[in-house]
Image 1 (cartoon, rainbow, N blue to C red):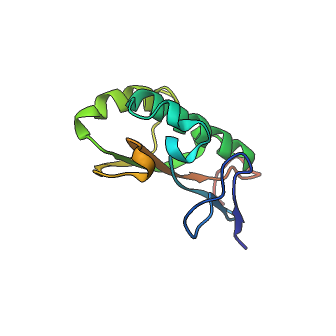
Image 2: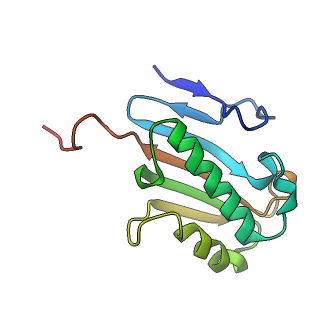
Amino acid sequence: MPQYRNDPTLPEPLFPGSHMVIDDDYVFLSGLTAEDIQGGETVLGDIREETRLVMRRIQSMLESAGCSLADAVRVDVHITDLDEIRMMDAVYAEFFEDRRYPARTCTQSPRLFGGAHVEITLMARRPGESDGTSS
């Protein structure tokens, strides 16, 4: 049965949803922006710092669910200006092992919550008790 969790270090979602939904196999994270994170307003406008702040929080949320970014299998990134994708990518790539990136979609979304410039959502496969091989 899925668990519906909110990160206790984040404000309650303003939307009818949960920060995380965890089932036997996956962890699903709702989209997260710098504006969603307390104190995030100090970095709004800098795509690199917003991305770094969001990725650090995602990393922490995954750890609270027994996962890591190495378990990520799918990421959706929304940015307000695709001309800034390389700057966002440079920071995003720092959080993954080289050439071990999850599947990803990146779209331009002209308006994100609270004036943020990047929103990231993620799905991670939960590590099993075995080595991950199927029988």
